[in-house]
Every structure is written in structure tokens, then in C-alpha cells.
Image (cartoon, rainbow, N blue to C red):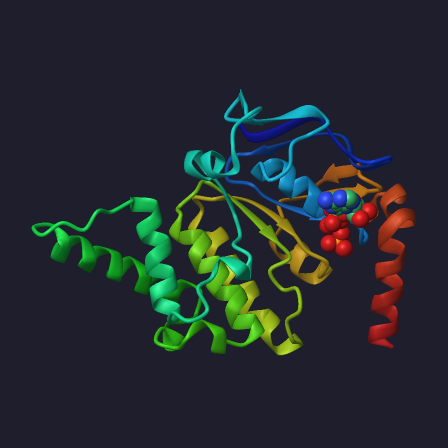
Length: 257
Ligand SMILES: Nc1ncnc2c1ncn2[C@@H]1O[C@H](COP(=O)(O)OP(=O)(O)OP(=O)(O)O)[C@@H](O)[C@H]1O
């Protein structure tokens, strides 16, 4: 079953069409990557899925129902989670406190006299589990603002997981990371995939990582869906090669030279 779909999704900014007539479908439990050159419309596409932007034309569907008019907050509530930008992290709180707040915001727990001890314990456990999953449990008591860039991206993923949504929209989780930090994030994302209960859409530029993780890949180019298929199909697709991957192969041969 397609969990998330778009039909003819389009958005224009002034005269520029950033996402142009994109029809796509993301089956339940699938891991799909979104690739394309800078400015291809990948982040704008995510903003349309998550409800931060309204389309000029076309629609987004979740579990077969149109999300027209459904706010970003309500989309999270029904199951479409978008990775937190670091601006959503409270910089003066600890890593642990940030994750616990995210768990709490999902549960909307009201602390009352009689149930506080039990709820507090459960939330605390869950926050620790999430920090373990993103390999950040050794930094639980650190103030969030003191984390390295890569660790902050891990914290964002923990906070997204805390919302326990069916769909995860991950927008370049390795952006700005040092090369040494990338394998840890790759492991985190792989472990989320291996748990098997999430449907994941990932924007990334790192082809090795994309090929490692993806069940399918969609290619955006000038806002349009250039191709959508298995990693093998996409790597061999001539149009994709000419438009985009040609440059990647060149980069690789330079790097490997
Ligand atoms: N709010 C906006 N107002 C005007 N133009 C916008 C807006 N948001 C995005 N654009 C334009 O839409 C196009 C697509 O941008 P977008 O950020 O979605 O690309 P991208 O594929 O995510 O790029 P990158 O890989 O560099 O992150 C760009 O030309 C960008 O300048």
C-alpha cells in the first residue's frame, strides 16, 4: 500500500516553478532517497509533504486521504515526521532533557500528583533508549549547545524518533558533517531501517550512503521528477546519467585517482 503519495504536486515562487508536477508514491515500510543537484527542489518537496508550504497545484495524500488544508502540526500528529532543525533544540538544556521534552510533547503528559512518578520514569526510560539508538547516550548530560555539529544532527534524529511517526522525512542528515562523523549517522539510519517499522524518505548527496540504504531512488531535476526506480535502474538510467550522475562519476574518478 502507498502510505504517502503526491499527484501533480506543483509550487511556484514568483515565476519560478520549484516543484513541477511531481506524482510519486511511497509504499509502506519502504526506504526511498531523493537525489538531484542543488536547487532541484528537494527541500521544497519535503516542505510540501510536511505542510510547511502549500502547493500551487496538486495534492499530497497520506493513507489515501488528501492532506489539503491539514497543518504541519496535524501532519506530525497523524504520522508524518520531519527531522527537527537545530532551531527546535533548546540549546541551554541537556541532550537528555531535549529528548525527554520531545517524548513528552508526543504523550502530552500532564504531571499530576498521583501519576507523576510513574510517567516520569517511563519517559525517562524512553528518552535514554532513544539516545542509545542514536549513539548519543554518552553525551546525555551535556548541554545541547556544546555538541559537535554531527552530534547535533544525531540529537535531531532522536527528537524526531521521539515523536514516533510512521513516516520519517530526513533532510540531509549528514549536511555540514566532518567525514569522520558520517559513518556514525549512517549506522543510526541503518539501525532505524533495520527495525523495520518506519517508512523513510531521505534527501542526501552522498551516493555511497544512498546506495547502501535505499530500496528506491527518485531523481528531481529542475523541480521535475526525472526518474524513480531501484538503485540499479537509477544508476543505469541514461537521462539521469546525463543530467546528474555524470558529474558524480567524474567526482568519484577524481577522488579515486
Ligand atoms: N521560499 C522560497 N521563495 C523563493 N524561492 C524559493 C523558496 N524556497 C526555495 N526556492 C527556490 O526553489 C528552488 C529549489 O530549492 P530547494 O531548496 O528546494 O532545492 P534543493 O534541491 O533542496 O537544493 P539543495 O540540494 O541545495 O538543498 C531554488 O531555486 C530555490 O531558490
